[in-house]
Amino acid sequence: MLKKGYLAAIIIFSLFIIAACSSKSSEEQIHDHLEEAIELEEDYETHQQEIQELEQQEQDIYSQIVELDMEQFEEIQQLSDEAISVVEQKQEKLVEERESIESSQEEFGEIESIISDLEDDNVQQEAENMYDIMGERYTTYFDLNDTYQASVDQEKELYEMLQLEEIEQDEVTNHLEALNENYESIIALNESFNQLTADYNEAKRTFYEDSDLNVSYNDESDSEAAE
Image 1 (cartoon, rainbow, N blue to C red):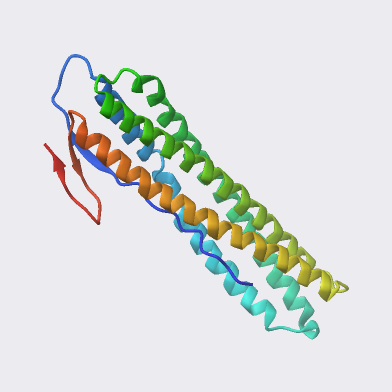
Image 2 (cartoon, rainbow, N blue to C red):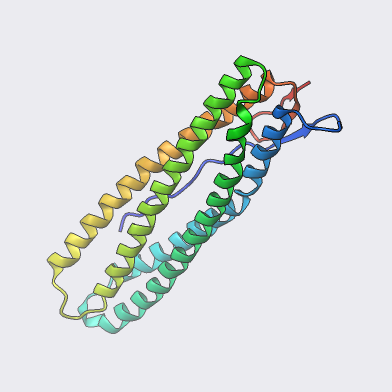
C-alpha cells in the first residue's frame, strides 16, 4: 500500500512586547486572539507526530502481510488484527486533532468584530486579508481531515477484508484503487493547507509590522523585531 504523508505546516509563533496600559487598543486585542489561536494548535502538532508514527507502524504491518500467501492465512489474520488496532488509534488521534483546530478557529473568530474598529484603513485592509486567508486555511483543514478520516475508514475495511479467506482478489484490488484515490486527494489538500499556512504567516507578519505593536518573531527560519 502506498502511504502518503500527512504533514502540516506550522504557524509561526511570535513573542511580543506591548507597553502596559489601562485599556488595550484594537491592534492589541487582535494580537492577543491571534496568539491564543496559535497556542490552541499546539496539541495539533503533537497529534500530527503521533499520527505519523502510527502511519509507519501500519506500513510495517502491511509490508509483512503482502509477503505472505494463503498458506499462512492465520498469520495474515493476526497481522490484520494488529493493523486494525493501529488504524483505530489513528481515528482517535484525528478526532483529537480536529478538536484542537476547532478551538483555534473559535478563538480566531473573535477578531472579526474588532477589525472594523481599526482606525488605519491600510491596517484594516491587511487584517481583513489575514482573516480571509485564515478562514480558507480552516476550511481546507476540515476538508483534509474529512478526507483523511474517510481513507482511514477504508484502511480498516481493507484489513477486515483480508481476514476473509474467501475474498476475491478483484474486490481487494478495487478497494485499493479507491483508497489510493483518497491518498491523492489528501496530498493535494495538504499542499493547499501548507501554502495557506505560509500565506497566513506572511499576512500576519505584515499586519504586525504596520500596526503600532512591538513584536519579536521567534521561528527557525527568521527572527526579527518590529520596534
